[in-house]
Each structure stands twice: as structure tokens, then as C-alpha cells.
Amino acid sequence: MRFIIPFEGREPKTRLGDTLSLTERQAFARAMLRDVLIAVRDAGHDPVIVSPSPLDIETPTIVDDSPLSEAINSTLSTAVLPVAVVMADLPLVTPSTLGQFLETPGDVVLAPGIGGGTNALVVRDSAFSVDYHGTSYLDHLDIAQEAGLTVSEAGPWRLAVDVDEPSDLTEILLHSDGHAHEWLVEHGFSLETTSGRTNTTRARRTSSLPGGPSG
Amino acid sequence: MRFIIPFEGREPKTRLGDTLSLTERQAFARAMLRDVLIAVRDAGHDPVIVSPSPLDIETPTIVDDSPLSEAINSTLSTAVLPVAVVMADLPLVTPSTLGQFLETPGDVVLAPGIGGGTNALVVRDSAFSVDYHGTSYLDHLDIAQEAGLTVSEAGPWRLAVDVDEPSDLTEILLHSDGHAHEWLVEHGFSLETTSGRTNTTRARRTSSLPGGPSG
Image (tube, rainbow over all chains, first blue to last red):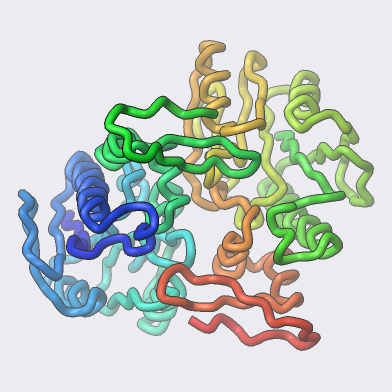
């Protein structure tokens, strides 16, 4: 099945701006994208990237510099259904996660992201369109319901964890062993156990590998 | 099946201390507990609360003021297996979530929480014990593996979202319609859409109901 993966590679992950430099964010976003592409291919599906700028990557890429929702709706309008749209900042996904996701019934399947976003969706009816602005999960529910479509919630937590904020890096160190994990470890990040949630800490200016999880 | 639900009702949810007063945190923690108890009963299971102090509640309660892990291990040691341990701050859980959780195979099933915790677990072998201190998800993996037990990860995102931090309140407003949701709305909380994740805002000193979601 076709998987559409939006990716913005020039100024990605701005909310990690206090933690990573622009060059680092570009490399880290690429590492997460790579993890998502591997999961999609290992699950037996065909990824296509939608990007506002050309990418030097061996995956079919539609270059479209319109706003995100417009670019995705344009791609959806010419795609053979069903089709999935999966964000590029989900480095926890596995082929098994995607399998469960695709088994969920419904004209539209929505995978909520922490904080009101829509991390992934399956479209099985052409009456649906996307709107990623604002609290997109609620907007997508509305769009589906107004079009008279059945809509289901996708359950896997590995789809719910997108990486936007520094605290999200912890989930990668805990629950993934892919390229994004490797990139973080190589750049000095490790787990730090506090009294509350486990945090991520960075060894500054180190060129050696940091130790393993502290907790 | 027996569900053990740890609950600390006197000084609960300290990380919400900037957002809610002590009295409010006590009431809000009770509302979340109520949602979890309803989901467990609606799924056909028998909840028992483990609490360091007596509770005025119509659910069987084991009062044990030892530290959390000790109290749970003591309860586990006399329970007929399999048994589940589910945290009381998971107001997004539904009977269907719990059904998927219990279908997961393994001597031990672990449901990761955001930030390294263990939000729920199923124990099917008496060689397992809990340790909730620190990054408990990794500790529980170690304990199971050292005991030679098979261990699986539970997938549902509704088990992964525990409510500790102010930003977690957003998930309740977005994805639940239970007592915790009702309590938040009655106390002035509503959704606020920003450029990033959707936040929760509180109308100060209002006695009327706030408006619906803004995004």
C-alpha cells in the first residue's frame, strides 16, 4: 500500500531549537525519517515522501512547496485508495505497529498524537481531506463525520509518540534502537533518572560515547 | 480477573501542584481513579485498591503503608495468578483497551508510560516482582529477564498516557468523557490551540462553565 510521508528537511523540529543546532536538527530529522521509511518498507509497503524542497534520498519524493495540508490533499486526490499518511517524526514505529494500524476498520483511521495532532491516518474514501492546522485530531474527526464517513481511532502507542519537544527524546532512548537512537547516543545523549519521569541529558562537547541508561 | 490499583489519596499528583491546590488534586485524583475503576468493572474484572491510608470508597481496599513496590509485591504474593496491576492515573483507559492489554501473550506484559514508567502490567508467573522506583519500565524488563520469563510490551496508547504533568490534562480534554474530564471542565479548564501542541488553559475564579475547545 502507498504510504505518504510528509517531510520538511530545511528547518525541521524548531521546538528542539534549544537542544540541537539547526544542522543537528536537520541530521536528526533525517535519522527519524530513515527509521519510519525502514518500518514502512519492512511492513511491505511503498513510501513516497512529500517535501517542500528536493531531497537527496533514495525514496520517491514529490516536491510540493504548498502548505502541508494542501500538498497532502493534492497527493491524496491522485492516489489509488486506500492510502496512509504517516508523519516522519515517529521513530518508535515498527512494522508490527503499522500492521495493527492498517487492520483497524473504518473509512478513515486516525492515530492521535500527544497534544492533539494526528500522527498517522488511513484514508479509504475519497470524500476525506486533511487539515493539519490547529488541533488536527478534532478537525479530522469533524471532517470525516461531516462527510458521513466511519472513523476509527488507531490504538498503538508507538504511533502516538511523535518527537517534538526535548522530553520526547527520552522515549527514543528507552524504546527504539534505530537510526534516531543511534544519532542521539553518538551526540552525547543519555537517560537521566529523576524523582519523576526519566529525562534525557547531554554530555557537552564530548567526542566519546556516553554511558548507558543511568536508571 | 483481579486488578490491583495502587492509589495514594492524601498528597496525590504533586507535579500538578502549580496548577491545582491540594484539595483539588485530591478530588481530581479521585475522579481519575473512578474512571479506571469503571473501565475495569465494565471489562468484567474485579478491582482491589492498594492504599497507604483508608479510603471512603465502595471498592475493596487493602490498606498498606509500606512503600509502593513493597505493598504491591505483598499483594501479588498472595494473589491467584494471573493478576493485573494498573495505575489509578490512566483516565483514558476503556474496557476495550483493557481487553487488548489482557490478550497480549507473555509471562509478564508491560505497558510503558510516557517517561519511563510502567503504567500497567500483567503477571502470569510468580517469579516476577515489581520495582516502581526509577525508570521502572527498564527495571521491570530486567527483573523478568533475570527470572527467565517471557515479557511482552502492551501496545494501547490509552495505557501509555498517565497524568502527571499539566500538559497531560490536554489528553483528558481531548480523548476522554469520564469523571476526570467532567471535573476539569467544571473547574474551568479548556483546550487552547497554539502553534505547537494543544495546551490546556484555565479560566480563573469562574463559577460558570467555560466554552468548548477553541481549536
